[in-house]
Amino acid sequence: MSPSSIALLIIGYFVVLILISYFTSKEDSNEAFFKANKSAPWYLVAFGMIGASLSGVTFISVPGAVESKQFGYLQVVFGYLFGYLVIAYVLLPIYYRLNLTSIYTYLRDRFGNTSYKTGSVAFLISRTVGAAFRLFLVAKVLQLLIFNQFEIPFFITVIITIALIWLYTFKGGIKTIIFTDTLQTLFMLVSVIVTIVFLASALDLNNVSDIYSNVKESSMSKVFFFEDANDAQYFVKSFLAGMFITITMTGLDQDMMQKNLTCKNLKEAQKNMVSFSVVLIFVNILFLVLGLLLTQYAQQNGITANKDDLFPTIAMLPEIGVITSAFFILGLIAAAYSSADSALTSLTTSFCIDIIELDKKPKEQQKKIRKTVHIFTSIVLVLVIILFDLIFKDVSVIWELFKAAGYTYGPLLGLFAFGILTKSQIKDKYVWIIAIIAPIVSYLLNAYSETLFNGYQIGFEILIINGLLTYLGLILIRRQKH
Image (cartoon, rainbow, N blue to C red):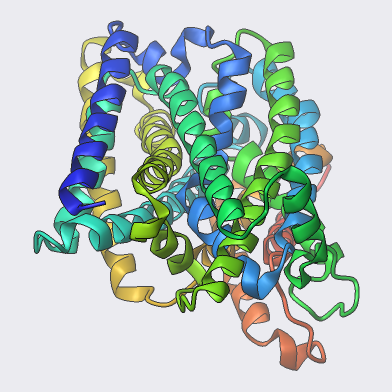
């Protein structure tokens, strides 16, 4: 596809999103923006959350990592399932019982204002980093496919990327996103299936049975790693990390929980979470199968691209065909924007509710303040993505994303765990110190783990370590009973 054809395809795609926004955002209220008036159908939320959970990072990085990491990522995905069950039957009942708009209000009620602000800031940093990682990856692909041809600099690409999100979310917020995420998830899944069908045909795999046999016989389809406990992909480490990544990056994340809190009641929210978690396993298997076929196709045709470059390179080859290339572009954009748009909305929500406490402002000013914060948040994302362009060059982005999440979400994990598992009160004014020290100690443990622990490599479990250190720190500042 030519750069102009790709540009026209993307423009058409966003015209559709803006039309959806027009019809879903006629009620320009804070209640609709933050909670969708608590009227979203659970099945739409569940389907849309698939795209939001996977994002452009998964779309590009999971297939690209199969050559070096085989199907080991599936161990993490199995952990996800158990994490989602904890969210459905432990966290959601708390959020619905307290009728929360921002989930971090729980920390204020449980511990005090410092804990509340600390949790909110931890989320704002975590989600800004996560959203920026995802958008950075997509902006790089768009730069390669379109904007380089027109000699447009990368920072302009980033501004256009964020501006498009702002355009269709600035009025409807989460109410619009429930519907746009559904469409975007559909585009993403169709894109993966279309590409698998093409690759299977090119590799003389004529039906599902042939694809299954090919995957089963390949050395790249190894799922479970029990051999070496020091290995970053060791099963127990990967499974537990997947479980706790889900609890924190979904259950303790305003972005993902804001969608669940739009359901009519707790029962529907739980139904959404459980059904979504099962479907997500099969969707991730699709991505891994895609990665295996992409790698085999590259090896067969002398293509040297790997990691995050593998899928985009093959998808845009002339012999792939216009239809497959078009679906790749649609899938990539859909995957990226289905997580980025809700991230922008949740960051706006958290800043409004938790930091500036919008409900305490004069009613006639609240809508204007929300819109100002939405613009401010968009500008921050632009600046962070440009910064990432200076830092990250040759990395498989999903692994860096999870590493970053381990440091930023750890304090949230420790705070919520302490609040739910104990009845103790703490010296609230010291919580922010614990939330800074725990990630620093975690980073040092990670950096020197092989020296300190006889070759042991810390992987995704850095999140668990960080959360545990936060928990232990909270024990140290526990109030003594008189």
